[in-house]
Image (cartoon, rainbow, N blue to C red; front, side, top):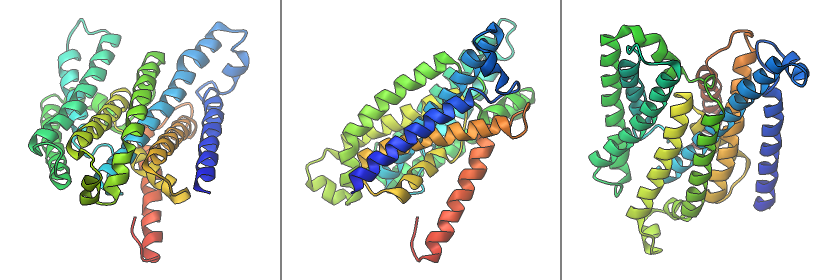
Length: 333
């Protein structure tokens, strides 16, 4: 029964993603006219092929990475409130972008593509560095609670360092705000390819490691009694979490609630193993961010809203409603 529901849900999410991809190709300042004129006019074709399609597909892949990372984080920490940014990756990415702005933004030789490359590398390096620092402070991954507390401490410290840089260089506040609010506006085919390759690698690794999460759900003592090398497998899961989160953040900035809400939506529809939960959460995260991106472009067209604002409002509203419903029923998230 659960297997049939899982397959049905996966198929529905893929069909919905395909429909949203087609819809995203027609949403923009020039509307659906560009799609109708794409076969006859090179400019219209360029708008659809080089701007709208990679942006919409990029939103799906970024959301899929965040959904995957959220499911891994919640299973690893056995906490339904865990999200992909829990181990200091968000604050590390923000600090990396701030440093990149200082290094590249003031140079007369910093062309637009060079600055964009510097911001992407800075965000990714910062996210991974934040996770590594958390691992060092937690003395590895043996103790989940210590790892969680170390992530909170690293997030506060790196966030403070970023604020100090912004106070010293207020001319970069607007660019920094764009990153903090999240945006898919700069995603092109190259970024899509990078995120897609990373998603395939992370999905394969997470699927292979999913039995560890199933074991941890029964308790650490039970997982250890099954003969699982918990320390080594936890390190592998943290690496998957850091790689998926860092890649998505590097291309789209900090987008809230997608990684947190996607696993909750899946669990509200089907009860399944962690392997299938990760796959379905990834597909759900992709659909959520793709829909939010299209909505951000359409609501106040020809202008657009930061997609991170919409995900925060919609995702936060959904989780508040879920908490209220579970509290009224006498349960927990």
